[in-house]
Image (cartoon, rainbow, N blue to C red):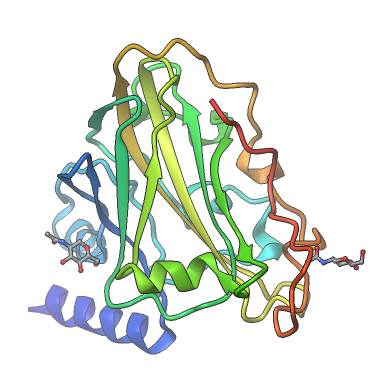
Length: 248
Ligand SMILES: *[C@@H]1O[C@H](CO)[C@@H](O)[C@H](O)[C@H]1NC(C)=O
Ligand SMILES: *[C@@H]1O[C@H](CO)[C@@H](O)[C@H](O)[C@H]1NC(C)=O
């Protein structure tokens, strides 16, 4: 009773603030459970929650990390994040579809990025500060239509599709899908980062190792041109935040 009341309040707060998390994802169509807020309340009330490939996080308001926290570990995989106790499995070249929820994604401005980091052992026990991130997908604004990636996310029913690079060699990886909601980005600290992580064991016949990668705490600065900018004008030169895209 208590747990469901608290969970319901959490959902109300979430929809009122209009935020979200990756609640599940598919790998070539196969369903995988992500982390949901109910698990947080199950952990508080019973000490346990299901083993899932989605990372645990305490984004209880389904909220965001702001630029003044870019150098803290919360930017890695959201607030007080910890590795998921399970892993999903997919071959290199597979299609990941991340489902953001609960409810439709509300913010139409800003880019969507995806990173991957390799774990030296199992990702279920990895030290998150040891992860070095490589960007494998970036989507900003279409200059012709002025439509941002986040409007595309909304149009796709809050689902975001990413391909695991076909050349990526087998191993244990954390995938990090991140929405940067830019509706307040004209003010310093106005950008809203929503990073979410999942564990995937990549199989298949890829041969390429990731390049060196970047600690999450060095990905962005509050004054980067794609972090602090006016979204309410015709955009002709948006600089997508973060390190260079790896093409595999
Ligand atoms: C997956 O997550 C989305 C977003 O919250 C939700 O709408 C959908 O019902 C979930 N799918 C399942 C099978 O639980
Ligand atoms: C666009 O270019 C102008 C002039 O160089 C610069 O001041 C501005 O920060 C750039 N905007 C973005 C979003 O990169």
